[in-house]
Every structure is written in structure tokens, then in C-alpha cells.
Amino acid sequence: MSSKATVHNSMRIYHRYLGFFLAGIMAVYALSGIVLIFRDTNFLKQTKVVEQQLKPGLSADSLGKAIRMRDLKIESVNGDVQSFKNGTYNTVTGAVSYTTKSLPKMIEKLTHLHKASTKDPLFYLNVFFGVSLFFFVISSFWMFMPKTTIFKKGLYFTIAGIILTLIMLFL
Image 1 (cartoon, helix red, strand yellow):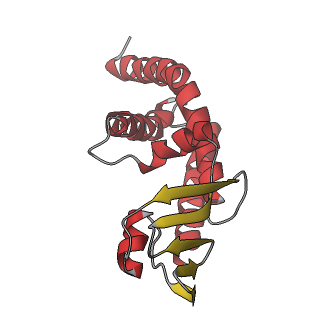
Image 2 (cartoon, helix red, strand yellow):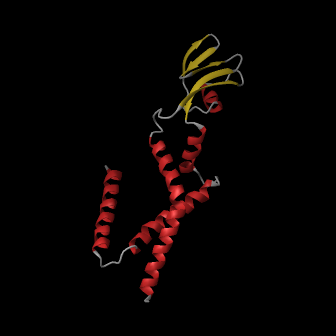
Image 3 (cartoon, one colour):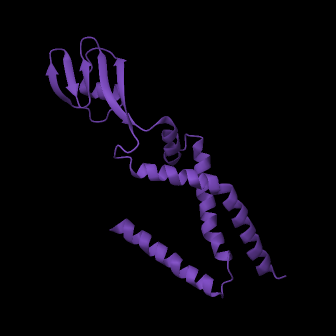
């Protein structure tokens, strides 16, 4: 057997077993990616009323930081109670009440896969997954012999995929 056939067969075997290993991971990433597409809507989100006791007399900026609400703006003041979008804050007692919308815990954990940073242990899974997907890209060209019609058609589909992606990115 020639060395080309050995590389060809080895790539097919690695591609096959890595594919089986990553099938579950890919399914989870696919589902969480679809959910993330709708992150700016209320799709699957649940409304939750939050009541906290904060320091009295906080400014709008301090209040926004304390309850993790960006660009919090006080819309109206009625005595000691300041109203903002989706909530109220009592400047004398420090009581704050507001509503938030969030994904259920399990779905939130799944979407966290896409948001993991280098400080998160999921970082290693993300790097492994990305490198594995890149290996799939490369090893897929060893699935068929280069002189076959299937391989040549596969190259056309590859080029079409690259062009479609570039069009979607730059339009």
C-alpha cells in the first residue's frame, strides 16, 4: 500500500471516530446557538420579579451597577420612590423592586457555552471543539479520492459555502 493510501485511510478513520465523539457536543452547540439567535427577543424567557435591599440614596448609575442594569435612567420621582423601566427604588429605605426576563437555568447554562471566556473552564472545551471542527474541514477532503467526480463536486460546494458566507458577512 502506498503512503498516500495510508494517509487517506488514517484521515478517514480519525474523521469518523472524532465525528462520533463530537456528535453530542455538536448537538448541544447547535441548539444553544439557535437559542442565542433569539437573545434580543423574549423567546423562551421567563419573567421574574426581583426584590432587594440596597443602600439608601444611590444615584442612577450606582443603582444600575448594583442591579446589573445598563444605562438605567430614572423616569419619574414620586416622593421617595424613583421609577425606572421595569422597576422602582425607594431612596430612603433602599428597597428596590424590578422585573427581569431570563432564560430557564438549563437553557442559560447551554448558551453559556458560546460565551465562555479564557477565565472559564469551558474555554478548554471551546478550543477543543473549534480545533476539532477545523480538523473536520481539512479531513473531509480525504474522504474521497481527488480524481473522482464526487470530490470535484465537493470542491464546488465548498467554494459555494465560502462565497455564501462572505456575501452574508459583507451585505
